[in-house]
Image (cartoon, rainbow, N blue to C red):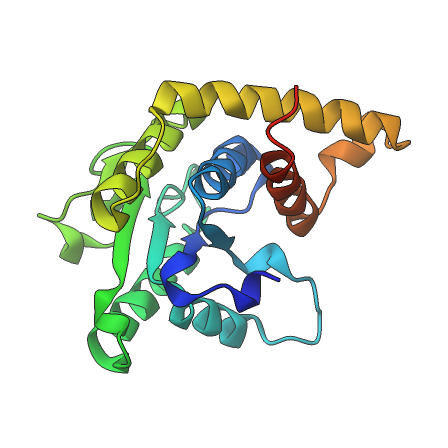
Length: 210
């Protein structure tokens, strides 16, 4: 189970969970798994009795690496509230690194956004920090995560283009596998995160079949 992965292998993902963001999230998950790490995010378990904030705090404590995407920190239309969840969880993670102890000062962050400098609207204290923009492009997101893990975790990794190609192979394999198992297109689109992660791990363990 993901909860049993060592601290140094876990990557916490704090990101939007809306349908529009799903292509980015799925690409992030694949890149992390491909490089040998374990993604951790709040939707990995769906126990309604579990306190969400406590779950997030535990995931943060258990993860040496964190990806925080602040792409939804600005309202899109008049009267709409911008989302505070992502900046809030980034703050929790920063506090964990600064004050928790027990090796948490080794935690590493990658902060993403859709448009460069958009984060300053919601969290101006981060001005001057390195923030990466993916432009709502899943391929750019893969490149950002791949390069960050190579830099901060010291992994020996394939090039981003090869990972992107492997992701396309996985998507085709997963779709055909689910159809063969009796899933409809709607079923496949509505899969839980834990099921998708398991499929990614199976695909890699089986030698990345086509």
